[in-house]
Image (cartoon, rainbow, N blue to C red; front, side, top):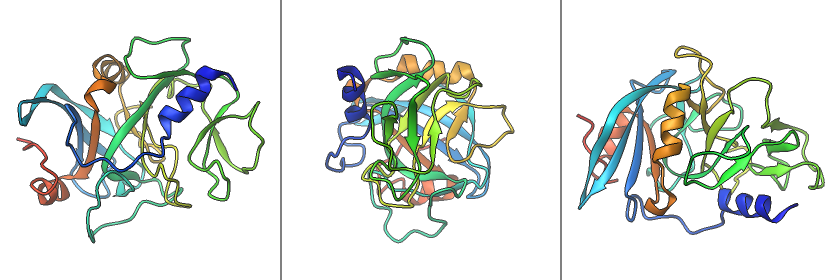
Length: 239
């Protein structure tokens, strides 16, 4: 494995201590849906000014998993939440608070400050819970295969032409869900298998806007759960 790819994989799946919520974060993306089962949602960007987050530009539409959302493994413990729990292959987007990993895409380079991985035909994301590489991005041409299922990242369509890793379940609890991304949608009414997808222009704007030096974070929640957790997690008001 070359040094660049190895560096990017470490950046993508660090074994770091859990962050303290939004402390130290100056960029925030909030994705909300009407309820647990909804396949469509809205994303709003925020930037910190002093002690508060303020909206940055207009919101945009996203599509969610074919079965809506379920509580994922992220940066903060939501206590004993009501609602579904995210599991491998359930078609749900993870709900919670998450940090963001590397950007990726089909082009050799990209206009982004995020670490960037140019996808090749041998890069896969492992979704086999029994593998030691579960929830990892690997180059199958140089890594010994111990998995029975994975996702080829270099696709024949445009869905992963530009994307960003969402750090869900990065300590890789078996069967808790894997390979969660922002990526390009098939269309505004076409759900995903568990990722958050959007129009090509909106993912391009995220590429340009996100700055790893500002510790960007993602919060994904149904509207009711957002309001329940807003004060505890020190989230901005949505309206």
